[in-house]
Structure formats: structure tokens, C-alpha cells
Length: 487
Ligand code: ADP
Image (cartoon, rainbow, N blue to C red; front, top):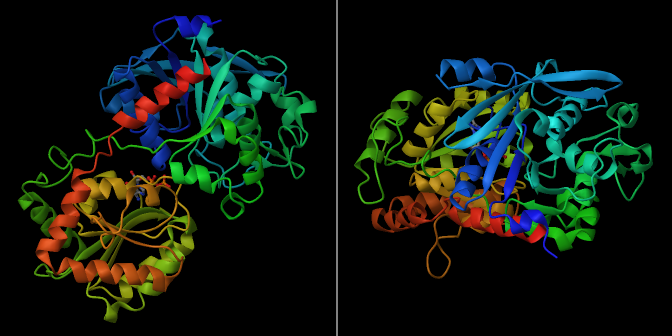
């Protein structure tokens, strides 16, 4: 017999996420949650988003002139036997209602460096507030779509919370990055959050003596997705996720890999207001102007004609900096200039700063997070460097291709699903390598640099990348089918 939700015409999905671009974004998760719902609307899904109002978010919304409605009633939950309230605001993101929860809980930095029972608390409170939200907004979802460990408490609560246990509720968990699992010593977490302590066992939330929220959610969610098909396979193998792969493997019947898209309206070189001159795959004059402007910003020789290798990234080991940095010591053998934009781990920032001051003519480093500048790098660059150690999906390589900047990428995760080596039969859209070391990366980078000097061949590779369909249209249809399958 069909459930009510299945009979009703419209499927109602609530995205539960700690990042939503453009309100709050640390990496690709924010991009995905900011863009996928807009495409789901086109498939008739009644989709909404709920997210914490991190410090500065409400002010930025006001400054940007967003119309904000605030509900008169607050959402209230109990944590450690005290009531915790949040003000509920609603804004519109191109047709998608977004609920922002403003609470003292979310006054600290977004993600704690040191995760423990105390610093995990805002994420548990957030999920409980989401479960109470319907009382305030008068709208109930058929499916909670959660993202990564930061909203993984919600499926766990539906399975094992004293108050929120609901065996009929449906949830989808998307794994954007299994490297972060929400793992910490239990201390008083179970008691204070209201989870039934009996769920602290190896078949549920416990993982080598610690709470592991992601593990709990993988077990308890109705369906689990990864952000690329290749990553769905990798997360079941030992080397990519340690022993959590066994948990994922045991739940593989409900696992699907759906490749992320990018917001092709926002990332569009034909209309992008953040680049000095727009262009298309048919007419690339604007790209040359973007390159000139980028060169001006770097202080490199403005007459330089060789390839500009660009990289916009979180500065973390995952992104391959331990193999990039040694390459910057072999610059004499590379006819290319490098431009990096990023923020993250201090040792990588210092190493990039050092490389830039040692090679002022060929390495430039812009420290920090800078959205407008990232557009200039994507548009003004020739080669996009992305030699990741692991990469669940990766959006930057797709953005780069859309802007005619040819990726050099490692064959891993979503990079493998999106970048095809130009030396393969039938032609590709980039240059790839398999072995994670500097020599492997340089092998591909050198092939790209050499090909760049062949204007016709380079034009074909660039054109193939620009014409790829990286929109959300197809992935959104796959999510719609997944939602239907669990109702
Ligand atoms: P991840 O989510 O692992 O950081 P992705 O490639 O999936 O990597 O997404 C990264 C997103 O964050 C892209 O939109 C990229 O342009 C953006 N980004 C990363 N670092 C910066 C930065 N320093 N300034 C501006 N945008 C950045």
C-alpha cells in the first residue's frame, strides 16, 4: 500500500545543512546546498532549506537588501535539561524558502578544530531544532536531506532519541567528505542530548569507544548518497576512509553515487559580473582580457605569453599541497607561472608565501578567502591545478572547465568522473595522473604546458571542457528518483 506522501502530488524535502551559499560557505558543501534545491524546484519538489544563522549572516543578508521575515514564535528544544531557543527567520533563495535559526548556540566559529562533547553540542541542538521547526513554520517535510557529519545527528535522533524517535520518518544522508566523521569521546553527550544510551554500541553510534555521528547516520538514514559515483566505490575501500568503509560497505544496498553539478547561472563566463569581460566558447576575446587583468594583479611581466597555472583551494593536505610544494622548487624546468588563492593550514600558507617571495616572477600567492578574485583566477587562468589526495567530487575543476581553464587533476573520486585525459582515444578535457607524487603530477603538468603551445590542439581541449554539461539538471532528476524510491 502506498503511503500518504507517495500518493500526494508533491514531495516535500527539507535540506538540513550548516552551510548554504551565498549565506555561509566554507567549501563545496555550501555550493551544493545553495544550488541543488533550485534545480529540484524545477522537478516539482517542494524543497526548503534550514541552516544556522552563523555570526554575521543576518547582517550580511540585511546589507544585501534581502527581505527577511521573522516568525513570532521561537523554536525551543531541551539540551542538558535546559531549554535552548532559536529565532526563526525566513528568506527566499531564488524561489527556495530558507529558514535561518538564530541562537546563542551558533555564536562561535562555524566548525571547531577540537571536537568534543561540548563543541559538538551546537550541531546536536541544530538538528533537534530542525525536528521542532514544523511547529513554528507550519510546514512538514516528507524527507530530511542531511549533509555530512554536521547534520548527521538528525537521522541518529530519528532512530535513537528519547523524544524524536520516529521509525516512519525518512532521511537521506549525503556524504560530501567522509574524512570528517563527527567523532569524539562520549563524556555526557548521550545523556545531555537525549539520545538513548543504549545506542552507544558497535551496531549504532559507537566507534572504537567514541561517538561517531556519521557512522550513526549511515546506519540510521533511509538512503545514503555520495557526491560522485567513483567516491561511492572509494568509500567502501579501506584506504580512503579507514574502517568506516566496513560500515559503509555493510550499508551499500542503500548507497548511491550522484555526481554534483555546479550552479551554471552563477558560474557563467557569458554573464559573470565579477570578471572584467565576459566571453563564451565561441568567442574567447574576453578570456584574454581576464588573463591580462589577472596578470596585472600578480605583478608578473604583463607581456608574458606562456601558461598561467591557477589554483583556488582550501589549503589542506587533501588538496595535494605536499606534492605541489616540491614542484615549485623545480620551476626552472617548467615554462609556466603559478597563481594560488586560498586559506587554511598555516604550514601550507607559509610555504606558499615562501615560494612566492623566492620566485616573485613566477609564483603568486593570494592568501584568504576571496570570492570575486576566485572568479578572476578561473577566468584568467589557462591551466587549473587540482592534484588532490582524495576528492569526493570537486567543484573547482568543473568551474575551471566552464571558464575554459584546462584542469590537471589526479584520477581520484569525482575528478575521475569529470576530467578525461586529452591523450585518451577520442580526446579529453584535461590532463590526469594516477600516482600521488610530485613526479606523477609534473608528468601531466608538463604535457599540459607543452600542449598549450599548440594553439589549435589546446583550443579543442578547452572547447570540450567548456561544452560539458555540469549543470544540476541531471543530478537533480536522480535525487528526485531517489526521494520517490524511499517514500
Ligand atoms: P571543497 O569543498 O573540498 O573545498 P570543492 O572543489 O568541492 O572543494 O569546492 C570548493 C569551492 O570553494 C569552490 O567554489 C571554490 O571556488 C571555493 N573556494 C575554495 N577556496 C576559496 C578561496 N580561498 N576563495 C574563494 N573561493 C574559494
